[in-house]
Length: 247
Picture 1 (cartoon, rainbow, N blue to C red):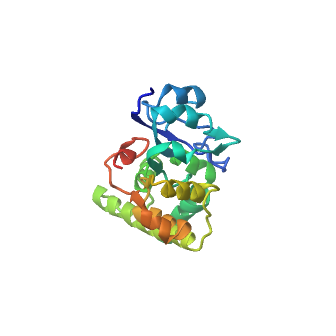
Picture 2: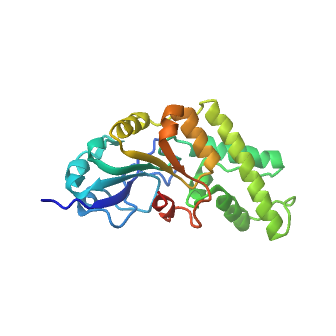
Picture 3: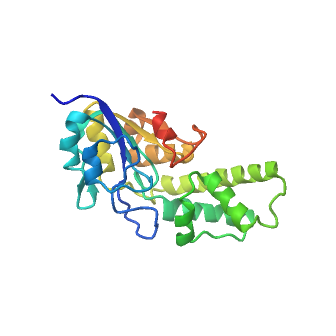
C-alpha cells in the first residue's frame, strides 16, 4: 500500500503575457521535496509564481498525469488532501504588466519623478520580490531623483508612501474590473471548496491589493472561505518560500 504522507509542491500556471520574461510557459518546481513523479514531468527552473498543491503520495501518479495539458493547469480536486495555495499576481489575475506596472508609473508621475518603467524593464524588476524592495533596488542602482530626500530614513518613508499610493491606484483598477480573473481559477476554487479542501492566497504583494482582488473578482462568498497571507508577514519575500510556509 502506498504511503499516505503529504508533500507540497508549487506549480507555475503559465502566463498569457509573453512580454514579461520571468513568466514561463512551462511548469516549474519550487520546493525540493516534490516527489520524483513530478520531476520527470515538470521542468525545473527558478522559483516563480504558482499554485501550491498538497497531495498525498498515493495520489501523485493520478495528479501528475493531468497537470499539464495544452498549457493549462488541470488538477483533479479529488487528489487534494490538504490545501490549495494560490499566489496572486500572474496566477489569479495577470496583474503585472497592465496593473502594477501602470500603477507604479502613475505614482511616480504624481510625485514628480521622471521615471517610467516600460514592459521590458519591469520584467527584469520582477526578479525582486516586493514592491517596496523593487523600488528601493531600482533607485539604489540608477540613482535617486533630485527631489527625493537624502537620508535613509526619509527615503524609506518615501518608498512606503509611493507604495501606498501605488496600491490605491491598483485597487481602483481592480474595483473597475479592468483586470479579469484568469480562466479556470474560479472553477478550481469552487471545486476545492465543495470538496472541503482549504484554499488560501499566499502572496508577498500588499494585503489590501490581494484582498481587493479576492473580494471584487472572486466575490464575497468565496472571499469569506479563503484565507489570505499577504504583505509584510514574513521577513524574506519570494523566491524564499516562507510566505507559503506560513499557511
